[in-house]
Picture (cartoon, rainbow, N blue to C red):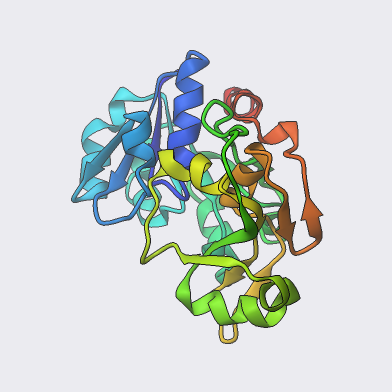
Length: 260
């Protein structure tokens, strides 16, 4: 099976495409050139960056057996008439803020499977499959390097004060906070960065006023666990990455679903 991923959220498509290719299902990603992908596609060398996503997908869509749209509703709608077997993957805030998007996607004739990437999204998409986000276990693993005696937090500037207000650890012991928008870290450098600290503070928020906390771990939090770094989540400290997040396990299940 040849699979084309349209769009990429937090590298999920590039990571999945990489492992699915290893499993014998050649996979590529096509992405809008104006969207910051944090270099996932460069690392895996499996992503085509284009200026006009819908037109570019239409030009190559017939070369693939299955299409996966990653929060790309407009593209899925415009290409529905092609009647190529497809899946749609919801990644987070779009569905949380607009639950009716699930009905829009369900109405598309070419969509055979709908996935959500966090368990909380199942309340908005009751018939969806839960796609357990993959972590590249070849890249993210424990490193024997010196660690700063504080935890790390990668976030956006608009959430920094909220994190300081909500996490006593920040004011009591100190946390090394990096604005991940202003200080972009290359994907391949993440294991070294994460392994340079004694822990990781992992709080996700919706961009509401005030910000609303999401009770799910981020992709970075999962990667920190793979590096052997304890992670402070909405539910306390976590020390172990569940095997369901190992990229090979996740992608085998993904292939099983879309082939059924």
